[in-house]
Image 1: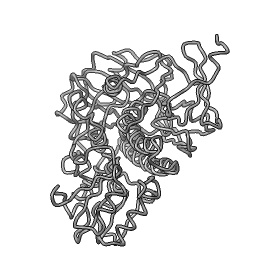
Image 2 (image 1 turned 180 degrees about the vertical axis):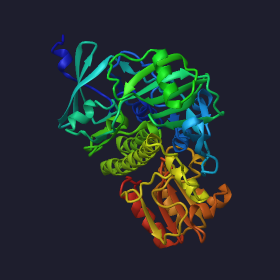
Image 3 (image 1 turned 30 degrees about the vertical axis):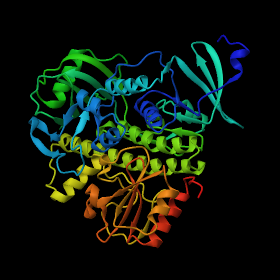
Length: 509
């Protein structure tokens, strides 16, 4: 490749370089900008893709997108999924689950093609003056006394820069992960699969996703805008062709799986893929951070991989912004690997559970049995739906989570705060259920970091908070409970102050 001496001289660079423009990289860039840090964003591809890929945005992530100020374009562009149906041979319903009653603002999934999700995020970045550098490939990332030395190939020209932090969001073949000597450890599921963006004539209930199982496999059918559908289907074991199936071939395969003519037409996009259950052992080395598919790969049966990418981005952005602005200690960044590592492992377990459940029903059909799901207790059914909506993600056990006083249920430290959509801004929020001692001292010490809210005036529920006898909840910038204190006495306020001081650099008194 052509290069010159002057191009090999290290160039000035922003503090944060984002490698890759999938949902993880783009959302991380949006969130960093919202928190006051302007990253540089590079992408190896020469232009955006137009592939459907991951489509379902879960309720928990819609909350995160809402806090980012991006919910309206998602709601306008997507169709909503409020029910999941599981059907067996003859299209007989085995079980269905509705998302109503799961206890959040958005009790539905938003379904839209991944290219449209990325377009919404790109439009936000462009409106804020951040241009994505397409045709820019990261060739190497090396440790340097000043940070990280990154070598780029920019349309055949070599550029070398030094940056403080790299967010690796470049997918499963991440150069950032390779530079950390990390691998995606785990398993690949048996079989090969086809994903496609199509239209079908098979009548489907509105706002409903379906999984249909039979003796030879399964079909997942999920609605998309413009009366289109995303479909997943398992390939025949004997089919080892490399060329992609034509529309009529795919229609024949789907009809055989469903046991009926589903009327497939208008095939827009199709691809082969394999399903994985894999994750990197380390998500960070202190300067490099892995996000999205660079960090984990899950079965799409759970619809959680895209959503975990958004959560990765939300977690690292507020922490990295505080550190980059000199408002927090670098040790704050150590919590990313712990928190997202645990959450991603949980996500893999949930996806694996759903994958195994569907494959088990296929095996039942294949052996001549009738697939049956016993009726669930209503409370248990809601808990399962919340889990699959990613509302149960918890950072309990993190160094950024603590409490003073008894554990009495409600909003547990490390859990998502159910009313997080009511909190605005980029800082922490302290919700007070009562009048604490030395409040002005606390307010002065943490001015600019923590917004103080009177729970009674703002009508926050004491039962939901788990503070029936007075106390306080510290809500982190990502909407998770960072600290809970009850009762609200001087010892609790001192403990809260000490907790914040472990990672924030407080104002001089």
